[in-house]
Length: 117
Image: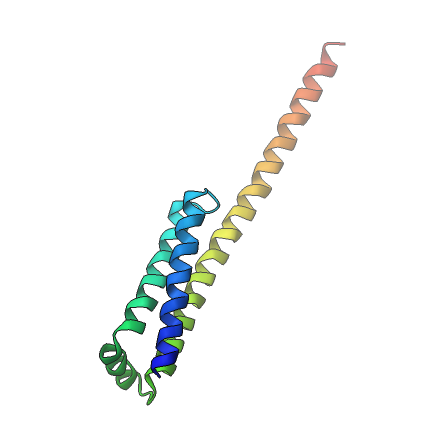
């Protein structure tokens, strides 16, 4: 159990580092990095506090604390992926609307240029 918790703690530290470096290099926007930082911080806190993790496992009806940790981590990341899917869907819709508005503007500019000849 301790080895799995150590690996999980190491992976969450790696995730924290990757997110912070990505923000610093402007590869990820701050508002999107916040979710990743919270998730990695929570995963790190849970992996470092075995007694608390045991209590959560008992509350969930799971005998093994590492299994509870992996279940919690998977649930958090699934929620994050859903959130980002919603964001991507909105961006796609906005992109389509913007392309349509641009096409209308180009049509009006082209039409105005042909009226003068």
